[in-house]
Length: 261
Image 1 (cartoon, rainbow, N blue to C red):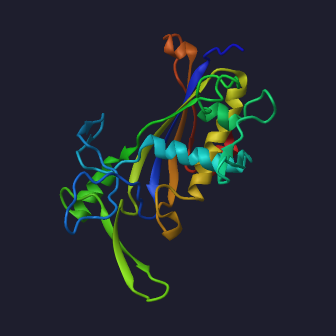
Image 2 (image 1 turned 60 degrees about the vertical axis):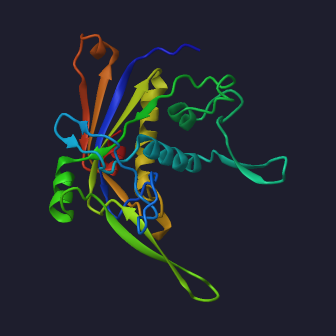
Image 3 (image 1 turned 90 degrees about the horizontal axis):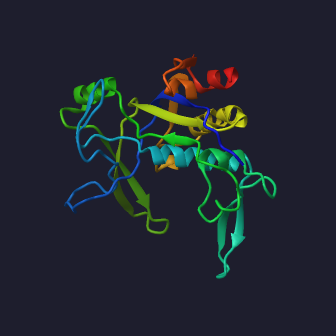
């Protein structure tokens, strides 16, 4: 099978936190009275074209966005199964193919496991999801409302013992509701079918809106919404300097994008 690069779709969007967002980070040191569950933050300053992301600001890893969308789409397209291992334990199993030789569209877009890649001709992974950093408006909002150097809120929860009713309080760090992050997704086209598969990415974004991102979703965390969506197509000729990139659409919501593609 031949894979001929045709071009790249670039999806840019704002991701708004409708509720507090918790994507866990690591605790580098133990602190008495410290936060039980910190969020992931930048380890160094990052200079972007329109703003500076300071060290210690929360961000959304591209792997978190990509992994969540992929998992939701695998359920949507019936690719999740179960198997029993040699210890009698039930494990999940992803069905990469729709028949013996045809990889599922989700597998083509997001890639497949290394052990299956030699058997299934899915080709190169189509999607790349970059880390999402806060917008300059959000950075200003944090500084105005939380104070200089403060970018998160603390949510206190109680685990209640079912027998004694004793409370076990715990603290969780969250990105405040209303915060916005700039998302960028790159999707490469290698055959004509890839143009049609583009819709599946927006389906994943819609599924995410009706689910949650990060941890604690069943307790109210992680509700998000996409907006200010831009879709740009850069053909092979664009990279060769022979043709300008094409603006394929501007959408206020994911639903608008799905209705237009």
